[in-house]
Image (cartoon, rainbow, N blue to C red; front, top):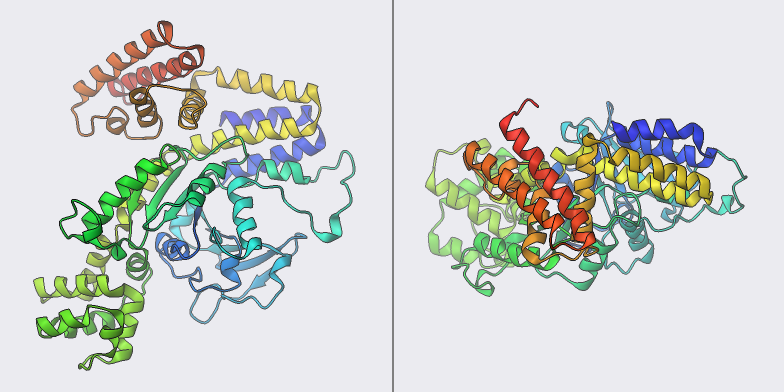
Length: 511
């Protein structure tokens, strides 16, 4: 990769401290994309993490562990390590249920974060970072999240307050800060978007404080979609999922341009169906409920209290277990599925529940926004880190040397994706003011990996796509030369080039 080559080439030309920072940037470039799952407290972040990973491993009940940042990454052997502020590590045994223990039995003020290594295929392509909830009364937990999302200044451990010696090849706080943070964020909201949701997204950075969240590296999910009262959403027709979809669209309009999309999801059902929590005995209990009288079952499904306390053949403890795994919406959905297909197997019922959770749509969007663009996102974050490291060195000559090297890199044709990401960030953040229709076009071209989606013509024939790409390339070239401000012209030239490259790709997919 060209950014990696730039780091290798510059390392002998910069100070030992800056070179150490470049080494960390190279390590990050070689690893999977790091995606932080963030949101307000009790928004269901950890439940969603478990669903994405496909394993119930992140504690969902409030405890010491949920007040810490936990990084889930691929490993050849399952293990959990507590990483202390002074760099020490301590192996942590899994709890009896296979999860990370909610209580650690240590002073968590001395803990930096938790590293969980899992033999999990999903984590081979993406490191998932579970964060403490924003809006918590626990200031330390909020600080840990803000530190990850906003690259806030790291505090030194008590035994390392003295200044690092000049010329040290260890990362100092300023340099470490420059390469801190996730490269992308999956932001979890519930029914209402609040001011601190906006603030958290504004603070999110991919590696440095110079790169805000945008449609390239941020999407949001409306979790607990089953709890939305459909009568409260106009146009839902009384349908819960329709109501959730409409509310997601409204939230997307509120949160854009900081996010690419908002998708509804039911994290609890997704976790149960995907992580093995839903079992054959659960399916059998639901089958018994499906055989009950309609009026009685409807009464039971009015509330959780009535559902668990009603006298019936299915034991109260079993019904409580169903609620913990599916909630009332999931129980109702499963019962209706069984009544529609009496011979349905437990496995087929689990798959139907998974479909109903909305998890697959979230995964597909993650793939489109993040996975397909992982190299570009990481490269853009790496360049931001390299720039920040050079700036932090305090050496004007070093800073200029790095700046010149980056400009040479960005001038190369293969670096166009970085130029496009840069243009997208400028427009999304409002740094370059564009007419609304043109802003939307820039966001569409820059935040999609699929050609049809980039051109706003999903499913269109190749000839139509090619003609449209060439037409828009010409339009943006004209706009860049006539009528655009200097800042707009800079963006327009990048978009023109993007359309031209799309046209070339359609004509010759092997090019």
